[in-house]
Image 1 (spheres, rainbow, N blue to C red):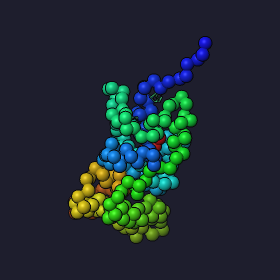
Image 2 (spheres, protein in one colour):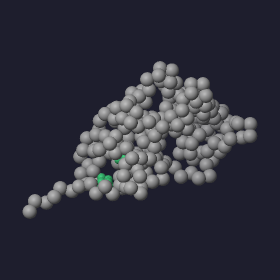
Image 3 (cartoon, rainbow, N blue to C red):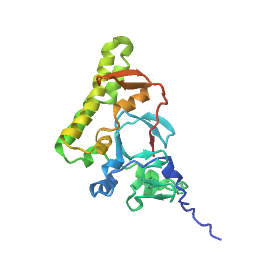
Length: 227
Ligand code: SF4
Ligand code: SF4
């Protein structure tokens, strides 16, 4: 008797473990508003991520865009119904993923990834995204972090300047350009006052609004999963 080919059991384990990364073929999902930018975030170049494929934390070699995650995995996964809330419009990685035969998934995985510049059409915002990437790069941050012992306060000041720029730019874009706050993690990546925890540091706000850089109480390390 012919053996039946294995089928997806719709158990939802893949959706609970992580959210998909977007590829260029997913552009229509965003361009046609099937998935709002509020549900996405960007991992910027040099940012620490947990790589689910290689099963290790590493620095992102290029930027990529993901669906937000909650404690139960992908934001769009509905635990009670064991269903995807955007099934019809799920990204290419999700369509291709079958845990018992990953050939299709890896075919998609090797295709070019979507970037913010593929999506952002407003030239002012686009320039701000570029400027932010230069002024607040993880390479620059790590450069100053590596020189704290040598330069002391001077290096700490430069780190705070960089964190401050990342913080203030988000505020300005929200207030002056009326960008929705929920779009900021897509436009500028996750706030650096949060991601600085990956380096065992944290930022405390003083009463006068200034930033104080301290050793993190809970230094749990690299936490962002990636399909
Ligand atoms: S691909 Fe695998 S893990 Fe995902 S729902 Fe299907 S059977 Fe479950
Ligand atoms: S978009 Fe849907 S199919 Fe894809 S990981 Fe999220 S819940 Fe699962």
